[in-house]
Image (tube, each protein chain N blue to C red):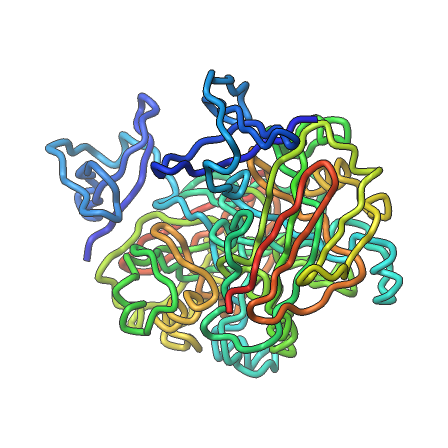
Length: 259
Length: 259
């Protein structure tokens, strides 16, 4: 397994590389993350850089109702095709960046800890096998929602608006390649107290199935992220509180809702 | 009023410039369309180039229920805030490019003739006055929809999926600056037969109001497009049929649904 990060150094330059999670050292790479990146001879301590979102999606495709436990709790039948909305590029932030409350919104803001699929190859109408090979790796996601907007209008569920605000797509800290999602759990804590701890093998559509089926709906390009949906334990974040989404092997994604 | 186009020339180079609608000649510009572009000395006949979508949106924000005539027909109250979904960058095509039926979908495909607002300045939480000055110009839109997918799942209206397919956001042929939308109509024809002809002054949220209110929901960046929503007269397109969306002053956007 390899852990890829994107970072800004002390001089403001943006780069990427691999992270040694034990030594907390970074080996910098050159080129493009998705096209045979080349290692440089430059390595340094993780503490010397600021982590950024590990990729820059042209779109985030966020699934709803993709875990059996949640579909049972909501009493909704499992869908026959991934149900999704699209979150815009400007919604993305990286590890330790603040989630910002929209100026126009005073209501509840919810966290949703999720697995994120990072696309590595352009794909369209992919088979499940092709989809599997188009997956570059996996990251942690906090899919933030201005929950009171969702049903504000009785005629139109405002999924894109409620989830599309700047800073509402937290991604990171790393992209793990060669990651076995079947054995992993998503653990979400709110100010250190565990709120979600669910197994990824409870997913309705597997990552490769999601990529295949969504690629029938739109071309996916390198860096795009599919947010696999959340399971039970979603709750709201008070201003000033911190949400950590941890998936063993990927790392801990920590973001505070700015007070 | 100035009409801006983007084009590919015979050598495959992509450029942009202004179009003289009467002489059908193009004056090429250099630099960025949204940052003081500079005229070159190069001009040529429109027939020498292939028109492309006039801008490359990072996102298209598509409104629903934004015309009084349609809201009355649907018997839905006018919304208090723009109701929207997001269409991804890969959904965009330009004039005369074919709309492609999704391989996975055999149902009805609908046209929606609309006005498109092209953003010229980054804006966030803009006032209506600031929003007005952030509008670069206007284009024609055919907001295509795989209509039978919308209500396929009883628990989740699939707006992003039904409207997000590759080729489902037709834009062009020009971006008109200094365009008076209040005096204009959107005219949509299907194989030459008029199907929509509605006045833009029937809009619920004006363009500047749309930009201001949507900019409270997400940062808008140069090249982004807000699709203002459609009015009455929407219908379906048979494979092989051509839809033209015409707004006097902007031009005629023509796209065929590939047979």
